[in-house]
Image 1 (cartoon, each protein chain N blue to C red):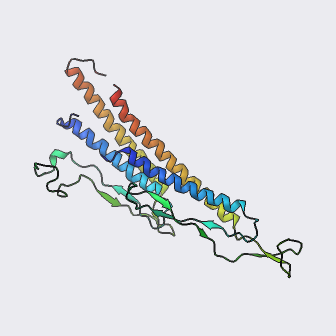
Image 2 (image 1 turned 90 degrees about the horizontal axis):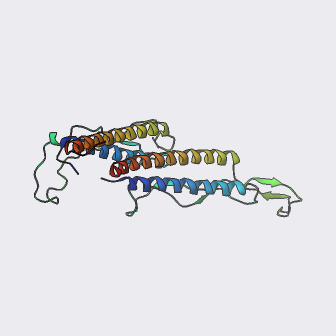
Image 3 (image 1 turned 180 degrees about the horizontal axis):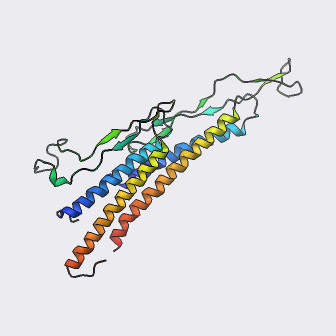
Length: 130
Length: 126
């Protein structure tokens, strides 16, 4: 029997991946107003390493959003150039919020599965108790 | 522990199938955001092991891969996201409830059979 511990490991890898994603989202939101900041994104990929159970997930390398930085006109800004423009950050708050909501939804689903699996495995222990 | 009794082996099979199914569903939920992932499921539990023909082996290492598993993985067709992912969280939750119920049923059968066996042995069964 594959056992429930493997199931727990798989679910834990999902929780970890979603938490990483949420951390990058919060970093992006915190830096919305940082001049020259590029938004960070992570991709999810299947984890094929030999020491993790099949079906686990992991986050890939962090990538920076390569879209052009908006030029903001503000001659009073300390980073403004001779023309009075400076580079803002290319973080799209709406996208980040949607991403955060999606991560939360997936996180909760994994947590619910964890709870369900835990109940199933403790039901087996009930037999031993009698 | 009482694999020889068909009722126990059936209950054990059922519980193992439910646990394996829960494992597959957990993989689906975990990969609900992985691009290109295809949702999977197990085939339904079929007849108990006595019904299928099996070759007798003198050692478990012999004839590896020739025994037929009672269930195998299948891909479930579903609406794919733009990134090619076909997992639907709602369906996975329903499937997981299904698996949990099957597991519960199997354990209840096992437990009550155990009670009958115990009372047949003259001890107070529950």
